[in-house]
Image (spheres, rainbow, N blue to C red):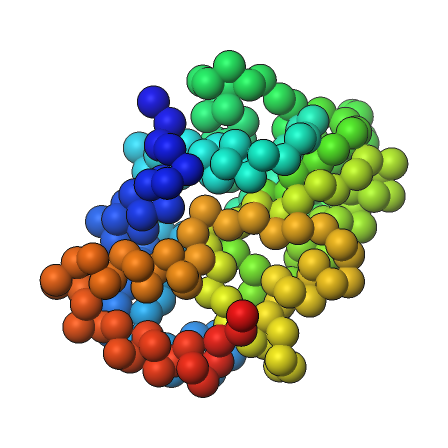
Length: 217
């Protein structure tokens, strides 16, 4: 049974913590910032965790209330995520097509750079996170160039953190393309999650301080 919209976010964070995808401590992120937590979706790396992850993506998509026709997974990480989400949706009676792209255009057989269903209608682009937004911009443009309509980008976790300017990469993407970004969980959900756990609440001050320095609304 799918988690309700009121609890799947907290369940997802508990799942991420159990899988060692979510960690607390002292880390340096890609931008060189010292951060008190780290989220590495690449560690969802076996069949059981991928099956569960696909169900969380499906929960977030259903909770959004968006109408869509198909899923698209940008190479490489988005490929398995789109497939897992499509399976999870089908398990709950919502069978939708999905496709993904190749990094290199195939010059034999069916050719082209899209594998799976043809891009058409309302498309949800699925990936793990948004760092600088470059790959998602390419995916949006690819979907539009095929004559389809990107209705949302769906990711696992939104850090709600500024990029080089005052906006986050997610906010910049939404501003530039008018495409909403949906996440399974956000930094707000993480704050609620650690506040409710006596073993984790010790990290709350460091996360609050980090957010005060780098966070966005």
